[in-house]
Image (cartoon, rainbow, N blue to C red; front, side, top):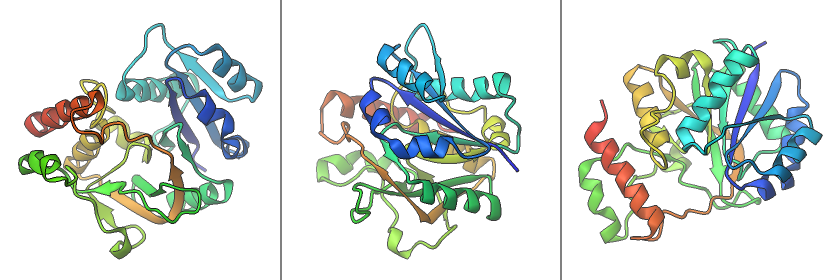
Length: 251
């Protein structure tokens, strides 16, 4: 059976991680290893992780989202002996998936064809408000969408998607990819410090004929802060810069 490595990057996210009791249950499953990269050397977080026998790593300097996940990927290969057939799960600290839903995820990864998957994300615990977590790749014309109060990245209508359908890209808050596929494209492009790392990754995998499949029946909650939504905010400008980089440098 393949092993599963869950990569979580914390940048002051102790509260999210400490409250996520489902994560502790998941970490007790056979063949599952949770690795948390502490981006700011939070002593309280380090103690919590080690007290609960989760994997803890850090670096001297903070890294960007993509670079952090690449660091975890390389660590798991070099120190934990992760193999090409194993699964690398990119998992935001503000995402919650129950133990039962995670078990469903493992079954899907085991039984469905493919090496790259994204579960179905919702905004609330009741799973009523769906997140637009699967989208089409942006085009140059989409740069004008914010001024028209439209999303830059057009979302799929999840209601008409079926289990296992191919989508162009999905939120980096929760992605599941085989080690062989992630390594084939050299992981995340570290030129993206914040935002669009996930779009770029999905695009390069798509170009390498690795399709992203939507797991409609596997549900999780993403309690995102959506800081890039306010036009001309600092986060929006970072987001716009990454969007422009993607549009003009993608290969």
